Length: 397
Image (cartoon, rainbow, N blue to C red; front, top):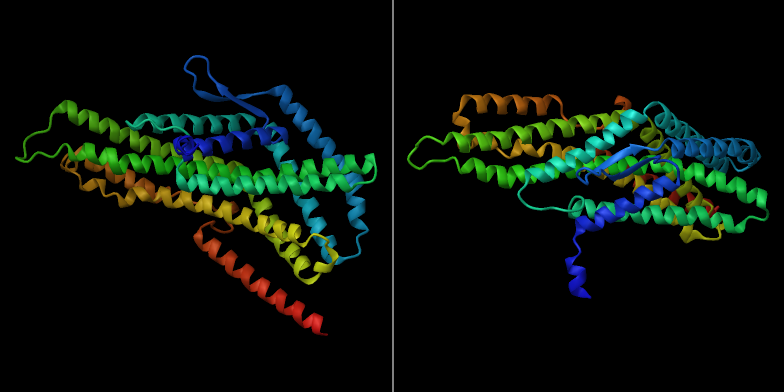
């Protein structure tokens, strides 16, 4: 048993988690395309599914209409201001993100498929660069982040479906089902953003590993102890590898920028909704814990919302930090730098990296980075401390 477990690689487990998440998104109607193998070379490719797309759009539109007709009036009569604010924020974010999903599926389907196929093609190009056979997705960091995200998805689905068992009649059950479908579908935006930025980080990491180990070794092989000339054939092979590495870096930056531009608005809305929802929900749990029969479940929702923000930020930080790694490799100090063409090419590539630096700035409002993580953590700790102190003073009075 232990021997069989040791043979299972972390990249393969990460790929299995992505496979389950892909089908989970298809069930929710957020992913309306199909990823399958091409018959010619067995490579993965994304294809449009028109009938499935219009079925998902129709069901999402029906769900949004049902939520506006049946759930919104119930929110309007809530007397508790904190509960009313939390429900209004939840419904508004769900409806806005649901609209964004429909707009992307209708108006940007071709661009979305082109971007997905670019990601798949990039992974194939990166694997062809290295002489080592690699399978799966990413490494240890990507697996840990994906595992925590998978746990958040399972807990999110459990909490939503748990509400269905306490409803008295069929009409309430159907309206709640539409509400759950719309809400979980809108939350898939932040999960897709997490997977997209983590894919950019995985691509950068694999190319960095190739440049740090194999490309550096090939460049060092051009060294001649007596200063003799380098063979043209060997020089052409190394220059081809360098050109391919530079081309892959440029395409990763272009695909990552396209992904960010396509989903920055819905990701920003979901991210802000998560932050404000976490603040309001934590206040309710700390100050008015007696109103909730399952305190552990409510604290689980707070931790889960908190983890969604942190995981997205960590994925962005991994992508940004991995994109800057090439400048620290000092490949320009290798002996091929004696050739003028190589020197000019490498200087232009480094200048391009500095000018087109991969950053995530939703609508230019703020930069998602490790500083954002520290700011969010410090703000939440300060807020929790204030709320706990306020609750203690209120109970004393």
